[in-house]
Image (cartoon, rainbow, N blue to C red):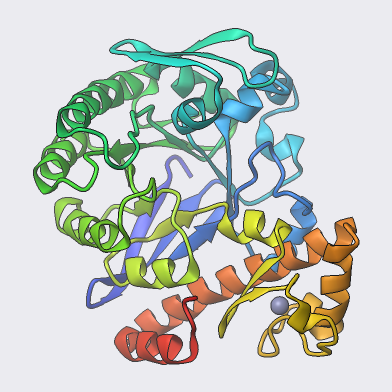
Length: 375
Ligand SMILES: [Zn+2]
């Protein structure tokens, strides 16, 4: 195959069922991408991702750039080979981590200067350099460098971020175009829309980014502290502002209920650290809602984490045992909840895909929320 392709297979209302074809297999959408920050989904191996049926995972450019470094990944033939993962990979541009992790960061029209959170060394990301870094890491889908602001930033600051994000998107595109290859498979560059929760800025950003004709678009700048209704409204606007035939990726969202609400508003791809990070803090996501396994109520509970779940964790281990592992600080406890949570998230995406295909997404959604507690 010479380029990454997206086929919209069907819709039910605004909800979409599609297929992203990459050089590392097909990705059925709606899809959730487990986050493999440093080239591993914490506590899981690539064989676990295969067993989960994950078709695409995400890795963070900022972390891999700092350690082990792009040269090390490239000398092993790219990240797929380095981490022995046959499925598709998406990398972020690194901009968000610079903003949230680096000890010091200064953004100007040319790029971002920052100090490593590891050793304080000084670095600079530009649209050109992050595109090249991601190309060499070897992700199937790579993202433009953008400027993401915290919720509550001034409108004037958002306007600057929108202008800068558009200028940077053009520069990212100018490096290799939107379809290219660094290794023996195709890579695609996706654009990112900014604008906070301001409708006019979203319109402006969408028009400028879509004019650059990317094969896919991300909705950036959400899940950064804005109220949930504003986030959902913005996603609904984006559905109207982005081309129907290209995939839409909502960055950094979210809880299971958010995934359902955003699929119903036209989103195809998601990533979030919640199912994995919260797993390590002892929070399991189930068909009934959240289970905080450290709660004393589970100390003698012989039920599975999620009695309706088909994963091997739920087939084999009790809440009481998993609670004990978390209380005792046993590594296995982190792994068991991580595996279950991703199993649940991936089940949820497949269930939504099947409901869209059957043209019964609204009914499915009502059934899901009837049995699901959000708190
Ligand atoms: Zn399970």
